[in-house]
Image (cartoon, rainbow over all chains, first blue to last red; front, side, top):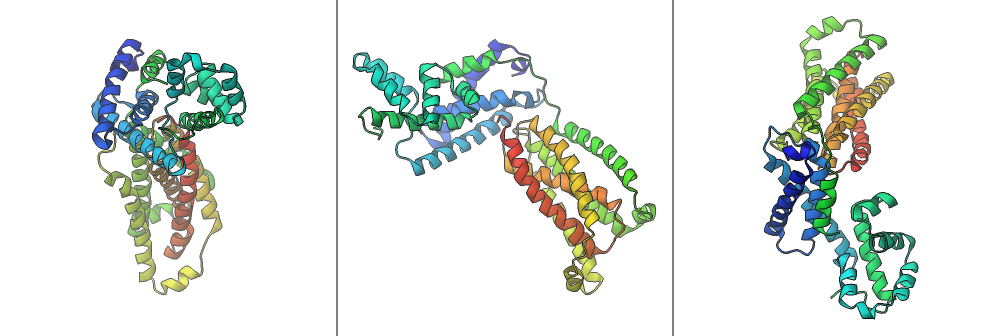
Length: 174
Length: 216
C-alpha cells in the first residue's frame, strides 16, 4: 500500500489481487457461500481505492482494511436483503447474458434483442446499452448517467429480467 | 464487470496520493482555525462586559468547560470516524453525548437549586440573538468540519455526521457564551442547550447527505 500511495501501479495491482482473496475469504467466513460474494469483494476494492489516501503508513494495514471490508459487506448484505424482499430472483449476474450468448451463438436473434432493449424503460435501456453494447464498465455507466454503481447494478438486473420476459423466456431465474 | 477487470481498471488509476494527516492533527488544525475565527467574531460582536470576572466564577467556568468538552470530544470522534479502522473503542463516539448530557445536567441542577424550576423553564426565557449567534457560529464551524471530513473516507455516515453536527453546534454555544450576558440556567437550558440539540439534529440530516458522495 505504501508503494501504491506513491503511484506504483504494479504494486497496487498486486495488492488488489491479494485483497481480493482476503475479502472473498472474509465474506465467506462470516456469511458462507452467498451468491453476491463478488459484489462485496468489488465494492471493497472500490472503497479501498477511494480511501487509499486515508491509510497512515505508520499504522497497521489490517484494521484499516478490515473496517472497509466489514462495512462494505454489511452494506451489500443490506442491499441484497432489500432487493430480495421486493423482487424475485434478482441475483442474476450482469455477465449471464453474455455467457448465454456465448454458449448459444447460433440462436441469437440480434434484431429481436435490439428491439427488446429499445422497448425497455429509458433508464434500463441506457444502462444495458452502456454495459453490453458500448462495453462500458459499471463505473463508467454510473458516471455517465449520474447514478451510483449500486443503482447501475440493480437497474441492470431489472433490465435483464425484463429482457428475458420480452424475449419469451421466464422472468424467474433458475 | 469481472473482478480481474476491475483490478486492472483501478491499478491504471493509481495516481500518487498524499496520505491524510492523523485525526489528532486534523482536529488540531480545525480547532486552531475555529479559535481564531471565534476570537475574531467575539471581538466583533463585543464580549460580555464582565467576561474576566465571569471566567473566575466556578459556575460559569464549569458551564464553559462542559460545553467545550462536548465540542472537542465530538469533533475528535468525527475525525476518528472519518478514517477507516481508526476508532479504538466505540466509547469514543458516545463520549460527546455524555458530555452534552453533563452540560444539561449541570444546568438543571443549577436551575433546581435556584428554586421554582418548572415555572422558570415554562416562561421560555429565550434570548433570540443567542440562537442566531449559535446558528451563525455553527454554520461556519460545521462547514469547515464537513469539508475536512469529506476529504477522508467516513464509513459510518450517520454517526460521523451526528458527532460532527454536535461538534459544530456545541462550538457555536461555546463562542456564544463569551457574548451572552445572561447566566440564568433556565435561559441557558432553553436558549443554548435546546438550540444545540435542534441544530445538531438538523445538521445531522444535512451532513449525512453531504457525506453521501464521499467514496467509501
